[in-house]
Image (spheres, one colour):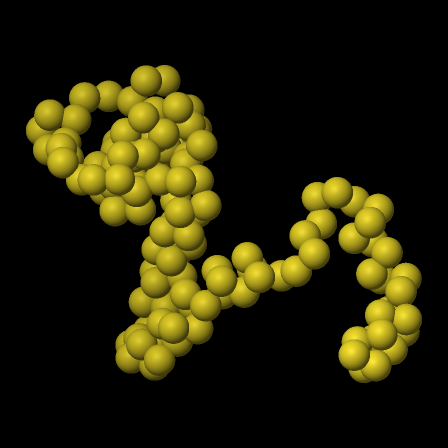
Length: 128
């Protein structure tokens, strides 16, 4: 207990920031949980044959974590991105519709169960 009190007194100024801004969290547990996914996969990264492979893994992991942060079904979100992105990758309005907080993506990817995935030939267009 004495160590904790000494620590708090020595770091009083920086600890006061928590009280000044209501958006600050009292612990970094949520950040630690998100980093755990990376730490768990770190052993697999040893087998990447190229820098491009490592970058691709980082991108997919970022997309999955972003989907989870927005309460989306990660599999359906990745499927939707791969389904629509090729036709809209150079259109800013199309990209906006594929962001995890867009209404289009929220409607398509918020279900927990993957009961009906669209087939590429039946997908239609993005609502731009």
